[in-house]
Image 1 (cartoon, rainbow, N blue to C red):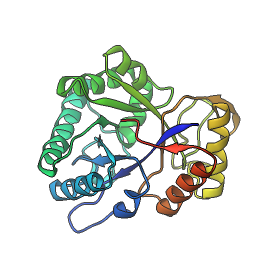
Image 2 (cartoon, one colour; image 1 turned 60 degrees about the vertical axis):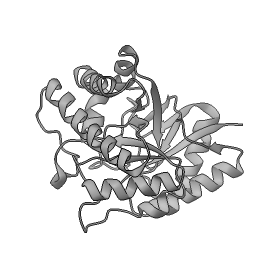
Image 3 (cartoon, helix red, strand yellow; image 1 turned 180 degrees about the horizontal axis):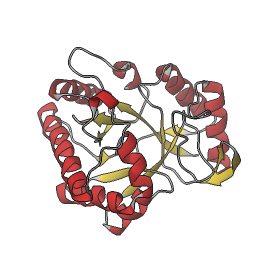
Image 4 (cartoon, rainbow, N blue to C red; image 1 turned 135 degrees about the vertical axis):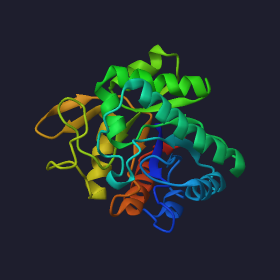
Length: 252
């Protein structure tokens, strides 16, 4: 029987402004990547999301990104690798502190948006992120986009690595996510997403936009919590993978 994690980026509201339906998503996913004050979130949003995750038995990850709430962390901010390392450490530390107040713990780290995409190809940035994670706690793992420099950097630093694929994003022939500004970047149809996932779990091959399928390895599937129809997408993935004999369970 195949076993795989289902994760989502959550806690991405700010103050009175809510992003997505975290309460519903936390009943479906097995891991939650919780924003920690960079691209989104604030102490109260973090705390409430952590409580909901703990109540649902969901594994918790820190989701650090560029300090760019207006751009939702999807723009690269010019920073040196040491500056990135300190920024990531500060955000992980913030979520860790709120987790202690909520009576739970942070198990892993997944970089958000532009930071995660940059760390996919820039080894110096990937090393900086891995160094920050290891310095905070040797028990923290990394959740990285499959087949990227962040995977290699984390392993080189002695940090436990888990890899993910995306249910709702298109891939380039180079194994990277299609930029959101380009056709094929997003998959909105749950049926298409489920069919692609089942094929991947059977073959290890991921279809690409404009090229041949590529081989990836993954222990987790991501559904973006801010996407339209995210809850229905996650529900169908969970139900239909389960019907196909796939167990949804946290990698940590």
